[in-house]
Image (cartoon, rainbow, N blue to C red; front, top):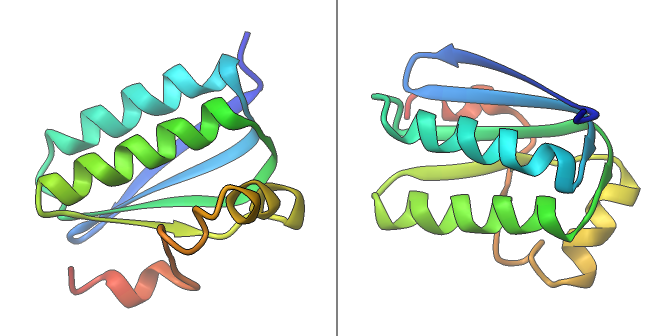
Length: 112
């Protein structure tokens, strides 16, 4: 049973996926499925809100990196709202913090 909760809401051209709990192997598949489903929609921007994620491992990081690459290949934007320090450490250690698109407020993307 995954310890990850997903809640997706839409704001114009932007789909915001708020995560809470642990983004590990048990929750990675559910997130991957949700992101793939969003790619079929009309939203041009996907924001992944990590602010309530308590823990993330390499399987969660892989889902995020692959989703960002797919979005880029589709001409879409994939952005992240930062999580707590222990989650951001995973991005820093792997140098993905420099390569991924982190934002402070999804409202700034509402124009698409």
